[in-house]
Each structure stands twice: as C-alpha cells, then as structure tokens.
Length: 338
Image (tube, rainbow, N blue to C red):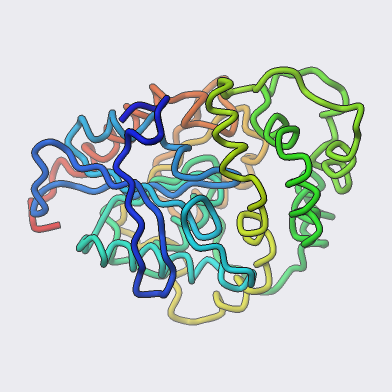
C-alpha cells in the first residue's frame, strides 16, 4: 500500500445488485475478523477518485480497520452512465448499500469528502441502520429542501457557486477535457497563489474564461507532486462527463427527497464528526450553524491553515483524528457482530 504506487493496493471490480459495476480498493488488516473488525467506507468527491484516500488507507489498515474505497459512479474503473439521473443521491446511496451487501457488511463507518460528503450524509438519511458512525469532511450538512430552488437562483444568492452553472452545462465536459492539465492545476493549486486572475474564477463565466485563455496557465502542480498530478490527468482523460453529471442532478435530487421515507437529519444516536479546513471557502459560518441545528450532537473540528483538500493538506491530522473519533464513540459499545 504505497501512495506512490497505485497498483500496490488491492483492487476489485464487481457487479452490484443495483446493476452498476464498481471498481474499489478493499484492504483487510492482518488480523481481520468479520465478526469484530470495523470497516471504513470512504467516499471521494470531485474531481477525485479512490486515489484521493491514498494517504489514509494504509495507516487505517495498520490500526486494524478494513478500508473500502470505491470509485463513485462515473469515475475511474466504475460504470459511467450517460444519463444524469443515474447520479442522484438516492441512487448513489443505494449503490453504497449494495456494495456493503456484496462485502457482507451489515454496518460500517461511512466517511465522505466534498461530493462524497454529501453522498455520505444522504446515505445516512436513506439507509440509517447501515452506519456505525458518520464522518463528513469539508461540506457541512444540508437537510432535504422543502421547496425547489433552481440552480440559477442558488448562484444569485451564492455567487462563488457560479462554476456550478458551468459544470451543469453539458458543454463543460468537452471544454474541461480539452484543458485537462490546466483544469487540474487550477483545482489543486496552492490557495496562496496570488495570481489576480484566480480571484473570480468561481464566478459565473470565470472558469470557462480561464480554461479557454491560451495565455493563462499555472506553474507547478500545486498540492500534488508531478507523479500524482500525471496520474490524476490520466484518470480523467476523455471521461469528465460522468463526474460532472453530479452537478446536473439538482432537480432529480429535489424530487426524490420529497419521499416521506427519507430522514431529515441523521438519526439522533448516530455519532457524527464534521471536519472543516478553516481556509476552505466552501464552508461558511451559516452552513456550520445549519449543521449544528440539524445535528445537535455533531462534533465539529476546525483545522487552522488548511483548505479544501484535507486528505492531502492535513493527512497526518486526518489519519489520527478519524480513528480517534471512532474509538471515542465506540468506547462504551458492546461488541456485537458488525
């Protein structure tokens, strides 16, 4: 399990009962016992894939956990349906449940980052009895909406989400694929980069303008070393449509969440940890207040000097903080077959 060698991890590809074929990494600890070993299921965000957890897998396996890390639908070696409706939160939650069924895991610790964080939180609403605990990273909890708000109006309220409108447009797939290296440099850039052209890239029109600007490029590979950067680019070559489809599900997600069967918040006895980088612009105080209101028992950890990419920027802290949380909430539980 060498982060510098993706092939050193245990890769599997299996057909799930939902009809989707998933690629995932499945690492067992040395003394694996299905009756007592806890499993951590790690869900990545955008634009990422299983490799986003490369620095966490071995440390957590060495602590005695089984670690399962899928490529979400549309990514890597997992199926890539064309229709955006296949990427709704309920369907992804059902895929996660089906993956757990395949692995004979009645329950697991569910950990999500970015879009994976949203999907992990929705898994807790659609399949509440399948979680031992829930860890949310970089994205505060948002409850199901009571009324539909078009993406355009959301962006009017939150201008920094203007790039969502670009991603929601199917034309964005081709634009990004033509400028994949530049796009990844922008996503993984050091947030301290002072280039003034980066000040409004998130606003409506800002990102496509930068990508189509032949005079614009960023030096270096940001938070990634050259080998990691090249691997990321290779994994997304000509395959951005699936990842971007998640941004095209606003109405699909609203419609499915009108189902009275969905919970409005994680169940009250479910241990929940939210980890946020203080320098992450996607997490403001208002969003944290909503999380505290909807999940009163949530533990919130804010990390100084860290932005959005927690698993890379603060890998040592994450490697220690999440197992510490799991141990703390498990201290008094009676060991039963998991």
